Image 1 (tube, one colour):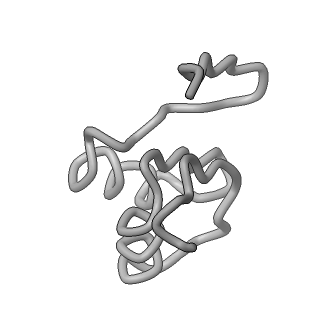
Image 2: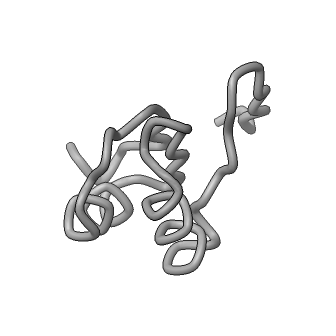
Length: 66
């Protein structure tokens, strides 16, 4: 089920704000990487700050055990 998506991470390659809204709607965390572009990273950080993860090459994300 789509509501069970925990984390989406990667280069989204210039997504629209509508695409970012959909990703944020169905995922607990959204981590747009460098290839997503500064505007996409900024949009997610401002509009979905509680879901935003700042990532780059070598970033380690510690996920809680379920």
